[in-house]
Image (cartoon, rainbow, N blue to C red; front, side, top):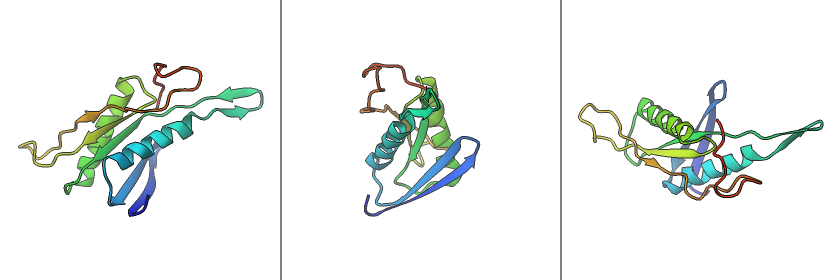
Length: 130
């Protein structure tokens, strides 16, 4: 997407962070999360075995200045919600600065509307793992 820079960082194990900078709207990280889910779901053939992997994704989004700690905490909270709600999906936490007298963020979960159906499972299939 023109006007957006991205940096992918591995935190450790199976945890990654994608930082987007530039003219980013809420639709951009949601679009990227959906594309990642589709890519991860693609069946892998190893010998005579076909493996299917799924992922859970937590997204933090803000238009206001926010600390790295607040954004990571919000993304982690969204990831936990994605796993809690059945996995193989993404959740978005919108970081609203100044909404908590303690200076912490509040996240609003936005459902993963429009996620592509899992192959062979239909639109109402199981949400997988992360």
